[in-house]
Image 1: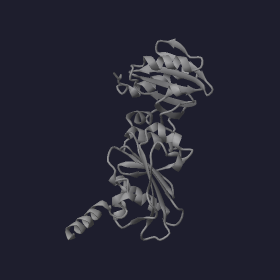
Image 2 (image 1 turned 90 degrees about the vertical axis):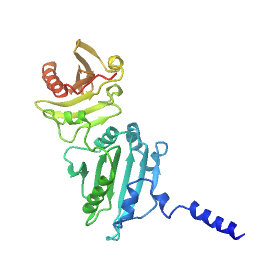
Image 3 (image 1 turned 180 degrees about the vertical axis):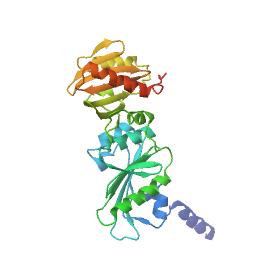
Length: 296
């Protein structure tokens, strides 16, 4: 009888997880909650693609095309500062490119960027957005004295706990080098660009030189580009081939001029006549040369 009771007690001890273990579903939360600087103010909540709308209704459609696997939401307070409150949203994405894509959707011109090596965060006195590897993180702090230091402090801790590259995709780096590009306007779009689904996925950046408009970069297509070209012809308004290396369409925002480069399609869009589009596309192609490798 004593042996049976002892076995029962041991079984119960093994079966019951440590207090709070179920509330720490993301690897970075465990060391942050354990280091003594921060404490969880409420249970951690997790969401997947099927119920993401319950947490970010209205923004779920922005996130889901980027292959969101899981979202962990945690609310923490600074142990040394009673009343402080920081909300973490930790998104596990399908790839580093997708994590960058979501980050780019929250990036706008004139925002402050702060290096948090190896990442770069969009920051304000009460917020920070950054990515590293396949993880995108949003941090929001309750306004008050010290809120900025808390946002930056916990961002630094999280970045150090994540793995992977924090560099933008090579296409985004190339766009950032284009003449007249508007800083902070690069987007990686998984849905429509300029309102057309056939112009995605791809990269987009605004430019302002003697004229204004958009540069577009459609990466190499897996079918060699034949299917994409047929779709562009089918879906873009007034699509026409000016010559074998120059295509044109008429969109509500102006002319859309396109040219193939390797396996990519490069484009400029806006109120841009052909004589201006040619030099812009030529300069664009020179910077992308060798990067647009055909996909087989």
